[in-house]
Structures are given as C-alpha cells and as structure tokens.
Amino acid sequence: MAAAGEELTISGYIVHHLTNLTYGKLPAGFERHAVDGGTEVVPEGGIWTIAHGGAEASAMGFNAIHVDSMLWSVGLGLVFCFLFRSVAKKAESGVPSGMVNLFEMIVEFVDSTVKDTFHGHNKLIAPLALTIFVWVFMMNFMDIIPVDLIPHTLELLGVPYQKVVPSTDPNITMGMALGIFILMLYYSIKVKGFGFVKELTMNPFNHFMFIPVNLFMEVVGLLAKPFSLGLRLFGNMYAGEMIFILIAALFSAGIAWMVPAGMLQIGWAIFHILVITLQAFIFMVLTIVYLSMAHEDH
Amino acid sequence: MPELIYVAAAIMMGLGGLGAAIGVGLLGGKLIEGSARQPELAPKLQVTFFLGAGLVDAIPIIGVGIAMYLIFVVAG
Image 1: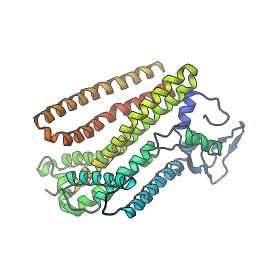
Image 2: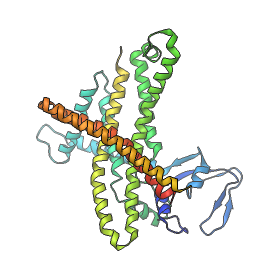
Image 3: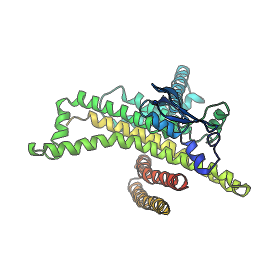
Image 4: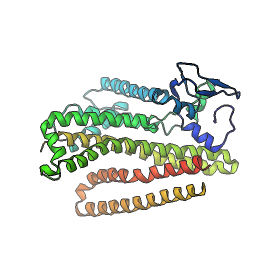
C-alpha cells in the first residue's frame, strides 16, 4: 500500500515497503505535509514524533530510531531465549523427541563447527555462535512471511510503515558486526597484548621503515572485516526482500499474471530458504573465524 | 539521461552474474576433484563448498537487488 492519499504506483509501493517506521525528533522549521494537503510548520525546539515518509525520516537525521527493526529484532531474540530455555529444561538423558531433537541437532551442529574452526580457549565463543546463528536465521526468516501480511494488517490498525525483516535494515546488521568488531579488538589486546600492535605495524614487511605502510594495510584489512560482514548480510536480505516485493507487485498486473507470479513466488521462496540459512551460517562461521584470528598469538 | 540507468542495471547484473558463474564453476569443479580423490572427505568439503558458494553468491545477489531498485524505483 502506498502512503494514504497518494496514488498507488509500483515505485510508491516498493518505496513504502522499504521505509522503516521511524521515531525521532523533527527539527524546528521543518514543513510537514499532512494527508489532506495542508502544511504544518514544526514549532521552536522541534517535536518527537513518528515520521510519515522518507523525507521526514531523513530530516530527523541522527535523532531517530527505527522502531520496527528494534522491536522485531529484540522480540525475536527473546523468542530465541525462551524457546531454547524451555527446551533445555525438558532435555534428559533418554532418546530425545520432537522439539528437543531439533534443538539438540542445532546445538550439536554449532558445537562441531566451533570445534573445527576455533582452536583457542574461550567459553564465550560457542554460545555466541549459537546465538548469532539462530537469531540471524530467525530475523532472516521474517523474509519468508508474505510481504504484505504484517505491514498491511498493521496499516489497517493505524501504523503507517512497517518493515518486518530486521536484517534488511543496515543499522541492525552493522550493529551486530560492530559488536563482533569490539569483541575482536578486546580479545586481540587481551590475548596478544603488545603483540597486537606488533601485528599491525610489523606485518607484512618486517622493518621499522615500513611501519606506516604496514599500519595502513593492516588497519584497512581489520576494518574491512566487520564492514563486509554486516554489509553481506544486509545486501543479501535486502535484495531478497526486493525481489519478493517485485513479485508481490506482479500480482497487480492482472489475472493473467497471477499464475506465473505465484510460481515465481514459490520458486523464490524455496530458493530463499537456502539463502537465509546459508547467510546465517556464514555470519556465524565468519564470526568464529575472526575471533579465532584474534586469539592466535604468533 | 534516465535510459542509462537501465544500461547500468544490465551491466551490474550481467558482470556480477559472470563473475559468480566463473567462481562457482571453479568451486564446484574443485569440489568434485577433491571428493573423487578422497571420498571420505566429501561431506567436510561440501560444507566448505557451501560456505565458499555463499561468499561468492553474495555480490551478484546484492547487484541484482541494487539493479532492481534502480530499474523500478529510481528510473520508474
């Protein structure tokens, strides 16, 4: 659905689907365009409100938060915690059944991956890897839910925008990558101590003349890791969501397009199940690999 | 010149797909080679293969997403 009062076009439909529900502070003097065509100027001191459209969201600048991304991601994180807690309480030494079996498989899979790739001593890595895998998978899984179902239902209830897949929001993925980057720095300094500085300055050319060159190359390499980690997940999910939205827009093209659109939808959804699992797995493995590199003392 | 956006999108998808096709082709070929030489390693290699394929796959998929955005939102 396009924003109320606007004509429904394909680009309007897509833009509407790709707009987050933003809560933030509008600066003083900003002109708000109401639905009925009137204009309202924001008074002195600005107001805290929900943005109606991308122009208002960008006028908010730094003083804004994506309410939908935050709620969905934190909510899914809580679902993960409660699910695993309730299943862990039911676990016993006998033959597992149903949910317990599935969750044991996930835990064992993550555990074996961590054992294969991480060779240091750290109790944090395996729980971290499990959390990342399941949480990213659940956030990506929101992509499989029909694109109009939740946003349109909420729009009927008065919520103007809703983007239900948190991992299509770069703030979420880059935030996770930033958290991993901080862990990387923390463990590098903790495990290697001064060796971390040496690694940044004396590698690959082991001569004091090359310190600036080495430092530049190593810092770029270090910063590229969290950047590519966050951007890869975001890009994959954003592109997948984009294609789902386009297929959904195809349904509006008439009766003749219904059948091919439906087949496209099913095909892309099946392919996307592979993609979301793979991306969650890659995010987890790269986290383990990066943290393992932080633990390797030369 | 909004027509150029379509050309840009086409180049984006085409070159991204070309690169990924070469990459996944090499990966798959080496996987078969490796598992023919040491069949007992096949499951382990397959996991690594999927990891590599996922890494290679990311760029063209992102390219397709940006290209679709260009065609349907920027140009449309």
